[in-house]
Length: 58
Ligand SMILES: [Zn+2]
Image 1 (cartoon, rainbow, N blue to C red):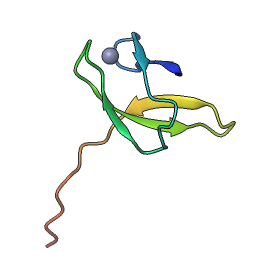
Image 2: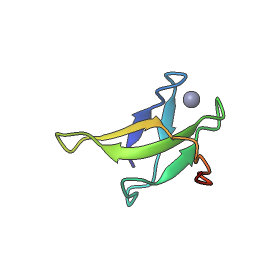
Image 3: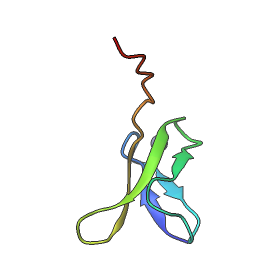
């Protein structure tokens, strides 16, 4: 089970082995919404999930 660093608080977050890029996780320690992804070298990492902005159009 990979253990990744939370980009918000620097704490540790364990994610399931079978996680897919784009999956969202909540870090229990700080409450951040994090998105799992793989960097250009294929290493697993976490980034802050974008807020889903509702686009109503104009
Ligand atoms: Zn955190």
